[in-house]
Image 1 (cartoon, rainbow, N blue to C red):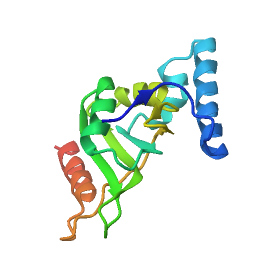
Image 2 (image 1 turned 135 degrees about the vertical axis):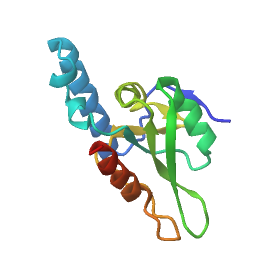
Image 3 (image 1 turned 120 degrees about the vertical axis):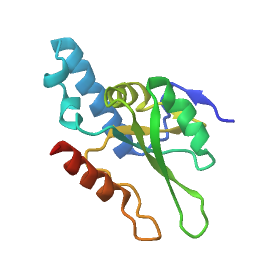
Image 4 (image 1 turned 180 degrees about the vertical axis):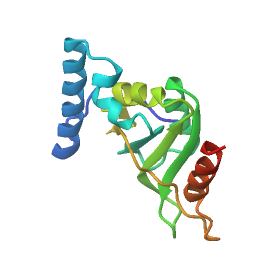
Length: 153
């Protein structure tokens, strides 16, 4: 399986470490000032139930990722990005929760943790579009079309 640790790695790249620290500073500032929903930096992502997960160990399976992230809500979609030729993980994924509020919990609690010795980055994503299928069907476009139809009814 894999080891989950809440300690920071010291051999991270500077960019990832700085992003994680900045998110933690924002969260601490919001807590200090007592900011809630509309005043939170998370609010700009209120219309997206997707998160970005980077720095994943390459050996993790979809089941492993779901196991870790399902503690904050029901996972309804997971796109682990893989090399088209080899099928091997590229170390990042996009995950959707049933309830958008779960994204806030995942970003605040899992960003910067270690999984199997690698520090992962978890962040909101505002405009994620799922992968196109080989038959040309664009699932996201179809979903948006249906939303437009049902919102006018």
